[in-house]
Image 1 (spheres, protein in one colour):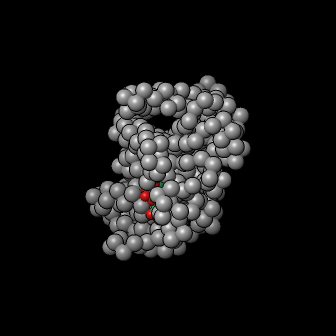
Image 2 (spheres, protein in one colour; image 1 turned 180 degrees about the horizontal axis):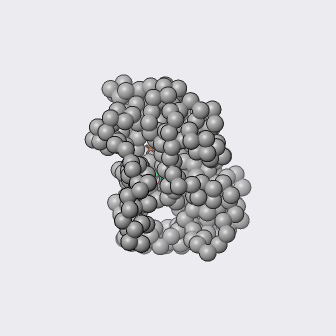
Image 3 (tube, rainbow, N blue to C red; image 1 turned 90 degrees about the vertical axis):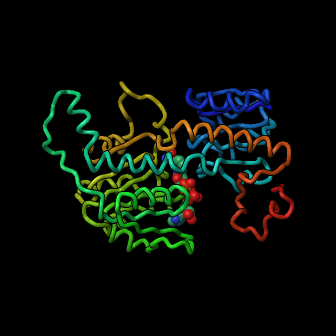
Length: 342
Ligand code: NAI
């Protein structure tokens, strides 16, 4: 079995080599991203393994299929970069639905604490022997209200962490469960929350869910956390909200135009993206480059599940982590009847 890995970094390789070694799988690691233009690199491979910023659109899919590729293995949970509907009947697409929800939830809290307690500023100061406390006043998280949008695996862990801090937790989910969480509608989340954290997927419904109108409904000084997908927030509206002092701080692990910048070293270069440059220049914005998932545990889980997905698809023609655009309609789903999509 030959697998072409796209957007592969050094930190991706050890876990895949560990879990794939016994199968004599042949791995080709490419630093370049998968696009229609780079799809040719997968020639002779049965599978491609992709990450969040690879482009698996109609054109890419056609080119992969023409070369005999059968499987797209996402080594991530989100799949907004894959045209699932077009892939149906052409390629099997499998993902890693959960590799470490703790990694992402803990990173969200790390960013929140860094922002609220000005740790990023204090770190830089003390390295220069500046021991002044001026401008470092924070506030207690205890007793504050956090609104969590998306009460799935990561959102729930983040809520538990917040409860440990003695915070009041409100949850909004498009598909709320009867699970005892304090659910609220979006206007209520916007109006009541001191901190809002996004943990829902990027879909047509959620694109720019945090826009100028939403920000105007929020408490003055609200702190926004986004460790989910960049395009949940209209970045220009966020900048306006920060300039108007409506948004008190933003902690962003994702950014809507991140694909041309994140995961690469541009130090020493002039950043072309003025919106990103403006955000980074703001003293109350903390930005990490899609790092929330990056723990040793998560990398091991990603490799193990990705390769297990492939083994199952090859051996059984089925894997529970296979994605299908029909999955919302289980009663009509061929996979449910025959344990196969096509
Ligand atoms: P999940 O599928 O367990 O939970 C997502 C929740 O969002 C579900 O409860 C779902 O009902 C809800 N939801 C769906 N549509 C919604 C809408 N329109 N409004 C509000 N809620 C909605 O997913 P999980 O594992 O908790 O991941 C959440 C997101 O985190 C992923 O979609 C992904 O974009 C992001 N993520 C980011 C990572 C990073 O490194 N920054 C790593 C892993 C995931």
